[in-house]
Structure formats: C-alpha cells, structure tokens
Amino acid sequence: MDEQHQNLNQNGSESNGKQARIVSGLDRLLKTPPPGEQTRAVRRQVIAVILANVGVFSTGMTLAMPTATLHQLKDTTEPVHLNDSQASWFASVNALSAPIGGLLSGFLLDRIGRKKSLIVLNVLIILAWILLATPSESDQNAFFWQLIVSRFMLGVGMGLASAPPGVYAAEISVPKTRGSLILGTSISVAGGITILYGIGYCIRDDFRLIALICCGYQLVALLCVLPLPESHCWLLSKKRVTEAKRSLNYFRGFNKSDEITHPQVLEEFQLLQKSLQQRNTAVKESFWRNLHEPEVYKPLVILMSLFAFQQLTGIFVVIVFAVQISQEAGIEIDPFMCAVLIGLARLITTCPMGYILEWWGRRRAGIISTLGMSVCMFLLAGHSQIEILKEVPYLPVVAIVGFIVLSTLGLYTLPFFMISELFPQKVRGPASGLTVAVGMFISFVVLKTYPGIKEYLGMSNCFIIFGVMALFALIFVYLALPETRRRTLLEIEEQFRSGRSKSQNQADVEMKEVFVRKPEE
Image 1 (cartoon, rainbow, N blue to C red):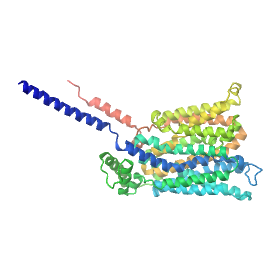
Image 2 (cartoon, rainbow, N blue to C red):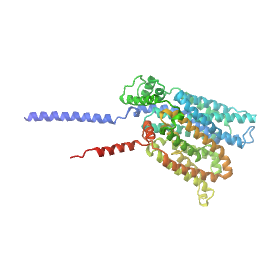
Image 3 (cartoon, one colour):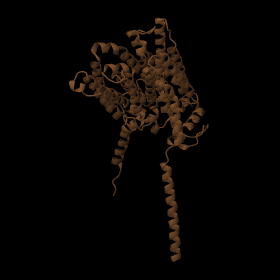
Image 4 (cartoon, helix red, strand yellow):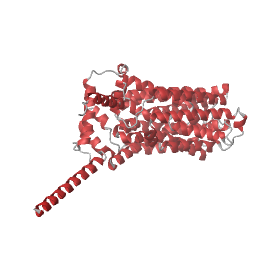
C-alpha cells in the first residue's frame, strides 16, 4: 500500500509538473507580441518609413529658404535683386501652390500608389532646385520670374509631400507602432528646416550654392524611394491580391511569400479584405457625395480647423521669417544663430513626439501646446510694452524658442500626424489632399499678408493676435478633437460613424451583463 501511495504521489507530482510546464509555456506564448510588433517586423517598418520620408526634408528646406536667403536677395548692391513686394511673393508663393500639390497627392495616391507618388515628388523637387540655382544674373525680370517658378514648384512639392509618407506609414504599421512611424513626416520637416538654417548660417551670400546643395540631397532621396515595397492596403484595393500578401508578409516580419501562413497575419489580411469588399460592393459614390457620411465630414472639419489654427497662431510665420523676427524682437545674439536654435529646438522636440503622443494622448498634447504657445506670444508682446518684462534678460530668445518647442508638442505636429489616422480608407487619398490644400492656402494668406500687417499694426500687436488665436485653438482642441491613441484605423472610423468610442461600447456591454446576470444563490 505504501508503495502504491508513493507511486501515486510520484505520478501526481509528474503530472502536476507537466501541467505547470504547459501553463508556463502558454504564458510565454501569450506574452509573445504579435508578428507586427516583433523586432524584425518593426525594423522593416521603421526602415521603410525612414526611406519614404527622406524626400520630405525638402518641405522644411522650402519653408526655411527665405530666412536664409532674403537678406541677399533684397541686397540693392547685387546686380539683380528683389524689392519688398517681390520678396513677399518669394516667401509665400510656395504656400499658394501647395494646395495644388495637396489635391494632386490625393489623385496620385489612389491612382498610381504610395511609392510612385513619392517618386513623382522627388523628381519634381529636383527640377525646382535646379531652377532656383540657375536664375539670370543680369536680367531683373527674368531673375524674379525664375525664382517665383522654382518656389511655385517647391510649393507643389510641399503639398505632394504632406500626405503620401504619412499614409504609407499608417498602412504598413500596426496600432502600437503607428504613432511613432507617422511622426516621421514631422521629424523630416523639422530636420529640413534645421539643416537649411545651418547652411544659411555658414553660407550667407550665395543662395545659388544653397540651392545646388539641396538639389544634390534630393537626388539621394529619390534613390532611397526606389527599393520600397508598395503598401499592401493600396495593392489590395486594386485587387492585386498576391502582391498585397507579399507586402503584408514582409512588413509583419516574414518572407515575401505569395501565401500567408501565420494565423494572426491572415486574420489581419482577411479583415482588411472584408472591409474593402464591403466598400466595393456598396454603391460607389464620388468623394463629394461621401461628404454626407459622418466618418468623412467629421474628420474633414476637425483637420481643416486644426490646419487653420496651425497657420493663424503664427507657427509658419516664425519658421519663414525667423531671422527677421529675431532682429525685430530685440534679440541680442546673432539672428542666424537664433534661427539655428529655433530649428534645433523644433527638431529635438519632434523626435520623441511619437512616445509623447502615446503617453499623453493627442488631446492632452494639444491642450498643453496651445496653452503654452499663447503664454509665449503674450510674453513676446509684453517685452516691448511692459517695463518689468523689458528688464528680464534673454526673454525674447526664451519666448521664441519656447513657442517653437510648445507648438511642436501639439499644434504644429498634430494636423500632419492625425491626417493619416482620421480619414477612412475609401476617401483617405482625396480627403488628405483637400485638407492639406485648405491648410496651405491659409498659410499663403498669412505669409503674404504678415509683412503688411506687421507694418500697420506693429510687431507686438501681431504677437497678441497669435496668442489670442492659440487660446481659440485650445478651446477647439478641448471641445472637438477625438482621442485616437492605441486604436486601430477601423475603430477610429467606427467612432465617427456611430458617434461612440470603443470604451463607451464596452461599458454598455458590461452594464447589460450586470443587469441580465442571475443572482448567485
């Protein structure tokens, strides 16, 4: 009997050990991240997004070009130069043409795909930099018009660059990595601004050389786009199923196989395919007819409003006229060095924004940003009018750099960040293009009229206007901006359609379970 008890105990302990090992193995299995979040997949997503955004540096370079070159272009001792009116066109015409690029990007995204849209962007920018580097050295009229044509083309490139990299990043990534990857566009723009400020600091009297350096960079950007795989979302929307499977396999860390074998990846593919099939079987309507649907017009209004506040708070004014504003604000250091500090502040702040937005969420980031921007602008305005503030050392430098940092934390970054999140797949291309077009048109109006308004009202009153608009932006963010942190694109679309968030739906289900659950005896 004792031996039997010992055998039973031994068998029981062995059985318990096996169960423990099975449970432990299941725990490890359950803790294993899904394919799209594993190291190999994330590395592929990151590399692809970096390569796609290399060309977007041109947007930052385009914005910063007037800061680095206007002092030379307006120099009356030069054989050919610009007057004040021509200089204002040089600084702003790119914003006027950017809506064309925004609308064109919507067409190209759906017609030729994400990758080929990026190729078109880089080729156009290369031609624009060549024109900017080779204007006439004797004919005043030809000199002006070639500069304007080149800046017009650069503006079209700005519009083209605003949507494709972000849409590409949103489609190839998973919800956990999407926030950081979408931010690649904003980082690239900030990097382009900083690089051009740095070049302008070193090369102060040769805008042609600056343009040639930018052209050489853009050639490298074009080469970076060529090896990129096309987005599986776009391929599937064009019924290129085999290519879509290969692309999805690649971005989830597997070989480019024609078949999907991993169950989670297959489930993701089938869910996307089902969503597209439902869209295709539905009555096909034009983008304008889709505007009556809440999942279309709600994000459209929200994002257009965000872009409007981005421009009306003076963010782009500070970027384009950084040197001139630094001089007139009473900053004692070299204005070109101040511009470099502004660029570095924006770049350094932009880099961790993916983590900040995932930590804070979109709404909190927007509220902190707009509140801080208004304070900085009021401090700048008060520095020239209030005696106490006049005695504070380096207040203008701190206020301007603080404005740049705080704008980057929210209002500057969020419109570009969320343009790839809020729109549904069926209208993502044209809706993104239209939104950017409206934003860039407002930018043109602000940049073109700023010099005249500054002369009429004075710099301090312009700062006050920017501060008041930042407060209006704060109210808008608090009342209207949805939270999209850690939510899939389909969940975001469903929230706009139903007017209810996922958390609300879950709460309703839990309450129903409470009421229908039988009491325990």
